[in-house]
Image (cartoon, rainbow, N blue to C red):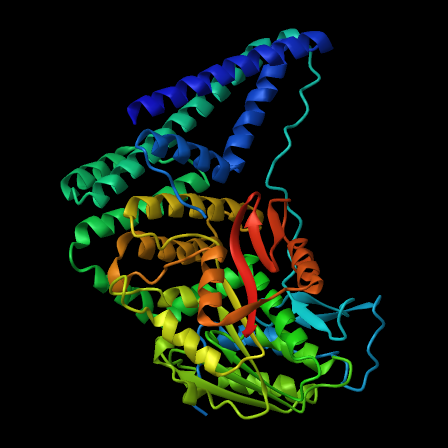
Length: 560
């Protein structure tokens, strides 16, 4: 491993020399002093190295793991929300001022209309765009908060116009300082990743003494600036917890899941700040809307109601669909008990009433999905059923042995028994359920370095409460993946191909997410700065990622 770090350092030095030589040649050809061109190149290299954390981490992990022969694989009973934020958060989505009545004429396929909703949580105006799908006779309304334009890559200022002989010394000193800072940052990152992987390897082999010594060494290293240092801090914390918790790892998940108020607060800020949950809600709602076309009685079963933020858009879209709204819309929300009681259901009912939709809401209290039995859902004959799961099914993948069925098998069979018109599933596009700890650790390090890198495009003020809460949301996932085992480890993410095999085996057949979902998902990304986010189609499914790495996948299924 030390040889790898040395090779990486030599390569970095060689690259710096070559870049400097090339810059001097180009500057000479253009008549520009070489030292000024070298300064600009060095500063640009600094900016590039700090803005593409995910690619840097990926290359380094591949080098380091290759030296060990390791290869990472990629591959009313009601629920309510947190009293800290639910009332105001849901109010912002349920304000129907200026909303067209049911009798209003539907616009033509080329029309768009804009309306403004007032977010009572922030006091800001929110844009709300409704467009008529070109390949469908139904509407889709999506709601996303406005953000300001921002560029994650800062352009260097032009060189000063002062006489060159007066600034030669200062420019040369800046070149030396920039190259030294870049080399120091790269060396620090190499040592940090080397030590993290060495500690994970010691944990996998059960050598807790060596793992403890490595963690102590890591804590003495200088923390790199920016996202790299933040990601490393979460993995160091998780490794420390795993090493010193011993056999009490089950206790970790108790604290992880018992504080519902904190979970809901973090979930809300993650939804408000990043595009991932908005992408999940938007694509799932569009698929449900198209599946309900022409249906008079519809029933949506939500596996994680949380704040209920997904459903106002669907209610409004159903109200505006050609041919009129359904005669009855039922919503069943599953989740842990909430202090605010009936509040979510009451607000959704008020919205439905304002757009002339007959609406029924019912909550099912359950700490785990496998505790819910089909009879609790009270599905009526003749109604079209949609089952919606956003980042929930991976929690059911634990099994006591290779020949022991996991909870996911029973839940999928129960869903299949409902004969749903559609099942929408959104899951992480990652493989954090591998049996080997080192491969799981390596995959998680790569995945979350990309995720933290993408936060740079979310317009978060540095060290703001929003930034800290979003990082805490991701940090809890890292901690559970790294520090917990057995039934305590619930963040067992699997990739899209693994979910395809599991769903087909359970008796479902895939439904393609149409052009309308793809178009709206891409329009969502225009509200975030930079060009790093990517929406891609994957055999009828949609993925949202950062640059070349998919991070979350949305798919739709139906009763075969």
